[in-house]
Every structure is written in C-alpha cells, then in structure tokens.
Amino acid sequence: MKFAIMVNEGVYQHQSTDSAYQFAKAAIEKGHEVPRIFFYHDGVYNASSLTEPPQDDRNIVSRWQKLAKEHNIDMVVCIAAALRRGIKESNLAEGFRISGLGQLVEAGIQADRLVVFGD
Amino acid sequence: MGAEMTEATGGIDFEDEEASGVVKKFMFVNRKAPYGTIYALEALEVVLISAAFDQDVSLAFLDDGVYQIIKGQHTKAIDVKNFSPTYRALEGYDIEKLYVEKESLDQRGLTEDDLLVDVQVMSSAEMAKMMSEQDIVISF
Amino acid sequence: MLHIVNKSPFENQTLDSCLRVAGNAEGAAILLTEDAVFAASKGNSNESKIKAVMGKVKVYALWPDVEARGMQDRVIEGIKMVDYGGFVDLVAEHSNCQSWL
Image 1 (cartoon, rainbow over the protein chains, first blue to last red):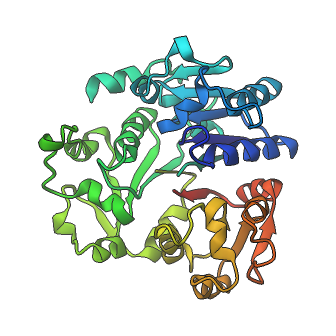
Image 2: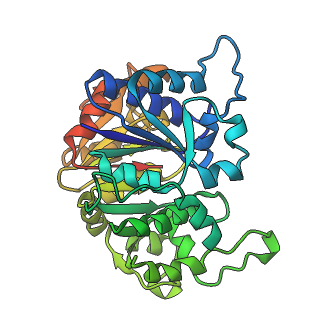
Image 3: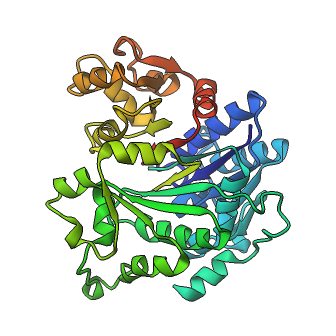
C-alpha cells in the first residue's frame, strides 16, 4: 500500500514530527511504500540545514534524510509556507525539495492513504 | 491571495501523471479559529490549490473552525489580513460543499445566520458519516 | 474510519469532539497517541466517556506513547495496545483516517 504523509509541525517543539517518522519507518518495515512526505505549516522547519541538536539527542533532520535516501521518499516542502518562515534553497537540507501545495493534493490522489501528523 | 496561489501551484506536472483522471473525495477539516494561529489561513490555501485538480472537494467546520466563517471579521487593528471574504469566493472555484457541525454552532451560541457563506448544517452523526465516505481527509 | 487523537483530554476538548462525532459511528476506531494516552488511564476523569464508546467503536492506544509517559500499568481494560507497526495496520485496515489535531 502507498502511504502519503503530511507533517504540520516543526522539529523538537512537538512530538508530531517524531510520530510521523516512526510511522513512516514502520510502514516501510511492513513492506508498504511511502512515496512522498509533505511538510507544511511549521513542518517546513524539518528541512532546515541549520538545525544543530545537542549530541545526545536525535537528529530529526538527518534522520529524515537517511530514511528518504534509503527508501526513495520524495520529501517536499511547501514553497509558500517555507518562504514565510525563512526556509529557502540556500538553507534547505539535502534530500528535501521545495515545491507547491499541488504536490500535497497530488500525493493524496496517488496514494492509498494520507496520514496527517500535527498539533 | 491571487499571486501567492499562482506561485504555490508552480511545478505541478499533473497532466502526465498516472493519477490524471482520478477523482477522489477530499475533505478539509477545519477545527481551529482564524488569526490566533495560522492553520486556518494555510488550510484555505490548500483548499484553493485543490480546486485546480478537479477533485470532489468538501470543507468541514467543527469546533473553533466555525469561527473562520463568522460574519463581521475586521482585522485592521491587529494588522493581519482578513481572509474571510475568500470563503465566499470558493463557489467560483466550484467548491460548494461546506459542512458545519450543528453541535459546534450550538456550543458557541451561533446559528447558520451568523455565517458569511451558505453551508449545510448537520448533526455530529451526519458529519461522521460524511467523513467516513471520504477518500482523503486533511485536517488542520 | 480511523480517528487519531493526540491531545491530552486535560488540555483541550479534542477528545470530546472526536467522541461526539465518531463515538457512535459505524466501523469507526479511535487511536490515542502522544498526550492523548492519558485518556486511556484508569481512574482518570474521562474513563467513563471512553468506556461508554467502547461498546460501539474500537479504542486503541499507542504503546510506545503509553510507556513513555509511565502509563503502562494503568491502562483501562479493553483498550487495545498497538505499536507503530500496529498503527500502520490500523491505517491500512480502515478506508480512511482523520487526525484530530
């Protein structure tokens, strides 16, 4: 089954981004596909290359990068939401791409399920 | 909102996609008040984009979401854009299915007359049924 | 339809809203995640509300969140525990899902 995922909150402030990651990982482990993860609202902060968590904490950004690379996940950051919050190509972490909201609707059309993680 | 919408649709290469021609039932569930947080505004931006995809789109307003479509919003003094007129423009995008849960209105001392758009008011049970019939539910 | 709730019932009315709409709906299931797992604990003031819907809809709680919050020995009987894989299964088994954010 194809699961599209929408992430609506930023890193560390809310658990929703962790829940989204654990869900995506579990879905893949069960043999499902996660073709696209769409980051919206403060979720765009998941794509900041400037994030520097303490050494003893999980690194949310690099965790996404690794999962996406290994499993060919298209990680899309909403352009309007990103520009509003100061995320642009110059500070976009590798593995993410900035595009339009249409990518979210398209993900909903193409996937079997869309799961929203937010607060 | 016009220019922003055009920008946000950029990069859609939809005609060539395998999903072209597929019509799914999309429901956008609004449960948060406007202005206090950005969810309502950014939800509306998604709704407007969805119109370009020829899907079966509906909006549900529950809980504080009903305050998004209340009449008489004046935002000049807080210096935030009043986006409430956009709900009235949805009809022009062929988005005409606006559902409001009656219990949410009742709890807030509101009636259908307090709303700035034509909506279908329904009970919690009817709302549950409507939700369960969707393919995709995007909630804010 | 799967309904996902992630808010503490002591913080706001999200759980109440979900139960009001989905608590009696045919084929509905409710999954408590993150801070919503506090609603799954014995003796909390929402226990009767949860038990009232359990005859009609299935209620689940996400075990990693239950355990993280020290609620593992307090879970109301009849609430089913799932891990993230079980969460995935629930989404797959139901025709659609809604997160009550």
